Image 1 (tube, helix red, strand yellow):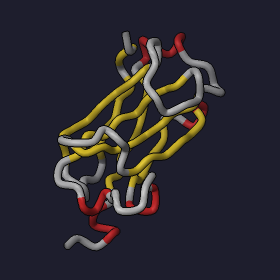
Image 2 (cartoon, rainbow, N blue to C red):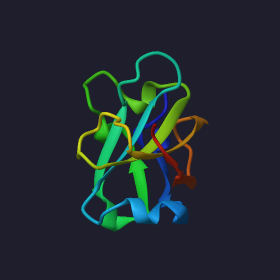
Image 3 (cartoon, rainbow, N blue to C red):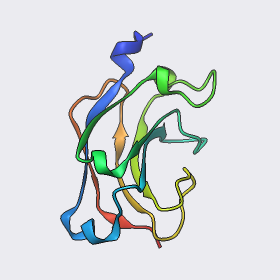
Length: 119
């Protein structure tokens, strides 16, 4: 078993310059990790204000959404950053998103770029 600190995923989130006109400073940014296979429920999630970007982040067991669903127990995960106009974590058409993965818990210096618009 990995220690909690070893299972943390950390890196930087930024926005692709070509999407800058599509966001407002008060938009919500969700940064989360979900298992590569199985449930799409995030294992760990953070919520930030867009005005904080670019920013560094750390996802670990302390940012878990549900007890028993921990980043430290996952194999490979997909890390997602999503700008939500509506302010909720469910993806909606027009949200901006970037993904990295699959990667293993414990990965550091992830470069997560929000670079696409959801259809």
